[in-house]
Amino acid sequence: MKPVISLFSHEYEGVTYRKNLTERALDKAYRGRIRDCILDTMNYYKTINPESLESRNGLKILRPKSYYEELHLKQA
Image (cartoon, rainbow, N blue to C red; front, side, top):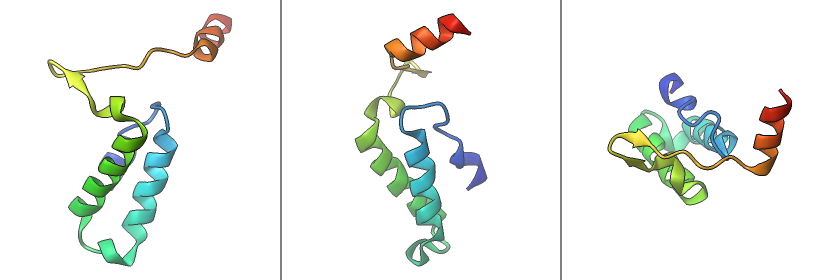
């Protein structure tokens, strides 16, 4: 699970992805079925943040920065 746990770090609702993946991995229904666990978590995360899984020509589409992020970057 380690290679995919940080797949959506610094993404919108990435914490939700990590939490859901960890909970599903510990669930008895997914014991030994890591692939199913990851695919179910990715489908769940797609409903929360569909832009995170999109790409064009192999390049990831980044969401625009929010006003708060722009302001925070200017102050840093």
